[in-house]
Length: 176
Length: 192
Image (cartoon, rainbow over all chains, first blue to last red; front, side, top):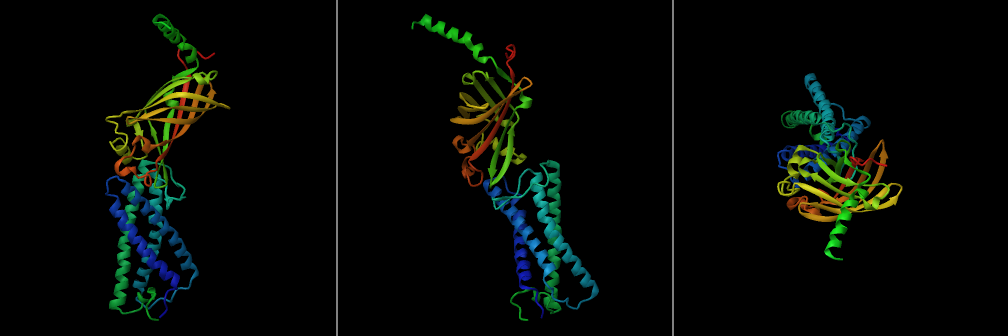
């Protein structure tokens, strides 16, 4: 079996973990009444988002530079669907943190990574734009959730129903 | 000094008032601004107060005699977001229901040369008074005098942000305050 290169495997699962964490945190924190705890959670969420954004850049670079294992045989429609979902996932992993960053700027709060590294405000403070970007950030997240579920469902189907190596080659411990 | 002499001295002082009030005195609110930068989780957040007034008497020729009293309507705060605006008027912060105004009374103006001044005075917020020293620059153009002053306010000295908000790790203790006061020569007493 041809596995994915180890750096790709590590980044795949690390990002899965960070994105899942950021998603749950975002869902939880925005309902909270204003408190120091809320300010902290918002900051953690933003730091997480910037980290994800940076790791996605590394991942795109690896995807471009490292050899990919050959595709496993499958019906053409499945190949096309898988490719479409993968492209959309990459796009969303880029667009979701970006929309959050822009939203934060529009709402008048600069993003400062780990409270140390300030990111530039690409848009100025603008309440209407802030609300709009908040909606965009939310909708993109629901779309991301949908695609992640589809992606995971396909992996499970390949593993347990088709019994092929689709999932195993993304697992570091699977036997070759 | 007997009582008559004392009263006479007071009257002379009062008559002498215009002498030190010659100079700038009338606030131009539309060209004045009181703003601040607080830090939340390391993120600078801009805020301002929309309503304030000031009684000022400042003669550039005799800066040491300057007097000023600035009163800021705390309910006019813009703390950076609607959520924050609703929060900071509450009792853990400014408690505007009981303490509607912040008052700064200038006690001493020390010229540092080059139109720079050190302004010391007493700041009262939420029933607590503290000595504050601000660094200011004065400039004049087209008949308008302008003070551009800055100082660091330690919010916890005044109980601004109590209870759970007392942790300076989330909202920093130090708040940078910037005051721009645009002044016209006092009405009826044109600048020489």
